[in-house]
Length: 244
Length: 316
Image 1 (cartoon, rainbow over the protein chains, first blue to last red):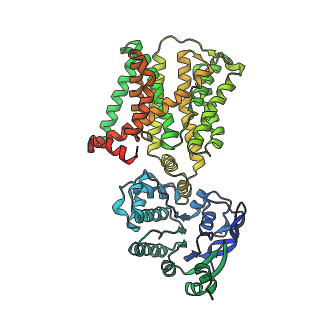
Image 2: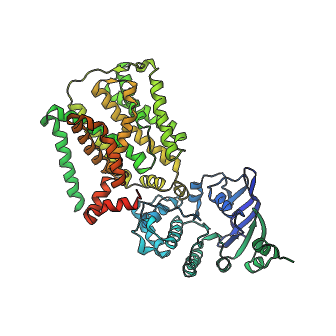
Image 3: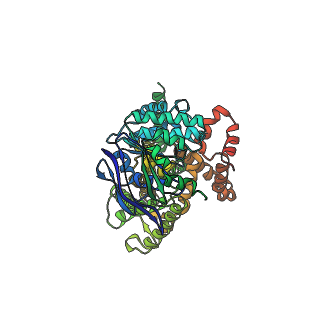
């Protein structure tokens, strides 16, 4: 497999707690890999170590074959890794257009666009994320679902080749979920590889090419969605052991 | 055709201001010098506080270094004034670079307190340096007449405001705004936050130090307590917050209005003058936390309701 992202022996210790333990996996070019697991299993920690907001205790992260685990977060972004946050982090005082323009202004690797060019670029991604009607509103005036779209549009304006999505569906109702799934599918058609954390099983099953299941920071299963979700180990991790 | 009209208006105002020393009485010119210096100080603070969102209390260090650099160069080395200004500015910018790297890692109140500490440290250090005249200070050569100081202060205020105008529409400035709005997100958006913050701090230091140098030569005297004065830093903050932080003209308006009122009170109602800046803080925070510039913009649309909205949205 031609991997865009490769993780080897990735480990994160917080004091005595081991949040992620010797994790190995890869994301193929153009692939959507779903990262699932119960609460506290270390999913967000993995994404934080890939995007650079957390430093790994051990192990390595390779992006397009080069090690990136010692680079500051902004350098990784410029290499082509975009992300969204589970707890959304918009620029509250700016309007929606400028929020997205910020991604184009600084994220696009090797370019230094003008403000005007960045705003034009922003318009494109606002339409892509079905948010164009709210371009002039302040980001802190947006409701939950629109904030999710904003996170997505802002990450896409950085023109990433790998997108890390941290629970973009949480707090959405089924209709809104359907819309965001549509957007993510279109992202993939652009040739962007995606690593997605998701709690909603129906969503992750319909989106992912492969699944990786974490429990207590360790990989307990990996493979095609149908196989993984029927794996007794995974069922136990989520639902607990059957009582006799 | 909107922009040229504006440019012409500003040019006329600037020409009138520049001509003031030959028309206006001396007391107005002196008030003009101290006010224009306050405009520069407020505008410099606006770069680090208004655009970058870092509540700096250390700008009086830059101000003091600018003054001392000028004084030491002129008194001890017998350099010309311009070289003294350059020395003061260089000291302040170097200080901003060396101290900015560690101090700008702190956020919120921790940054404020750390920079506040720097003021105390600098006062103590300079009070014990012989070349700076220890705690007695230095007396600079006397230059008769206020015209040079007035024109210099005017030019510097204009230059600083132009720099802020550039920041407000540049890629660099957008990086600063992103840091103010959410630093963690800014980093993940590809912004080199450390570089942006340190550059903003250095830029703020440059203009503040130049103002300090002009002020020291104008009043021909500098001592540690006067040069590293925290209340001056507090005034900068009040003027920016009153006028509108993170805007180009807010700090100018804030500095002009508040300087004028406080000067008037100091002359007529001495008892009130001491309380004045305290009253301004309370009023500004309750009624217009985003500054005068924001109120003026919205007042045209919603009228008096904008104060009501301010109170409601900021849950005072």
